[in-house]
Length: 211
Image 1 (cartoon, helix red, strand yellow):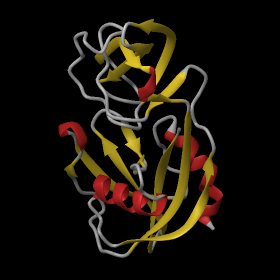
Image 2 (cartoon, rainbow, N blue to C red; image 1 turned 180 degrees about the horizontal axis):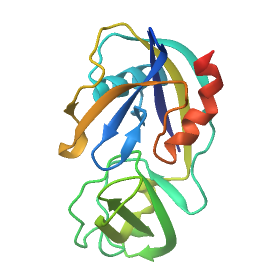
Image 3 (cartoon, rainbow, N blue to C red; image 1 turned 30 degrees about the horizontal axis):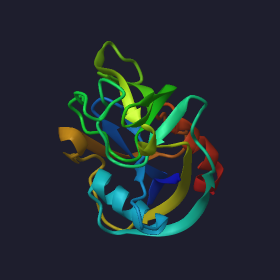
Image 4 (cartoon, rainbow, N blue to C red; image 1 turned 60 degrees about the horizontal axis):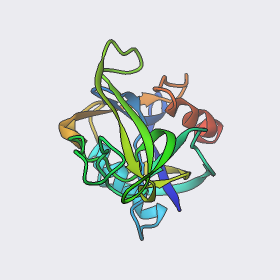
């Protein structure tokens, strides 16, 4: 199964030149709006939905499709194809770790073992206090996921959207997991700094966005 992702490159025309909408995540740094395509959903619907969820904007239109990355996963990575807990042992009856991880999250994946109720993969999850310069680990989970919850294909779709509403230069809105997101407009020239690995997304489409 391939899990599809979307990245929303939202632009507006400004007296100083074209601007790109980014947002400051309280832990994960400066990002581009992006997310996972739901089951049965097309990328066109998903990119507008994700853009709205992460920016609050309601007057967005798709301008053009900018391309895709066929498989973003590196060696030793897999992606969740359904919501799941990580288990403390290779057994779904073992104690689960508290967070429920959502479909579309990527993990480092290690060895597989046969549990008594299925095949499991050893996984690691790390969450830091801030990026790109972390000072401490906020969450470290070392556990097991059922093999049927994991996929080894992730395709990302790049989409250019236009914003048709007046906004402040910067604003805030509630994000996922009780976070507060702070969207803001950034000049496209010079190229804005974005947290790794999202900076590669902008590199992939930058020449198209500034034309």
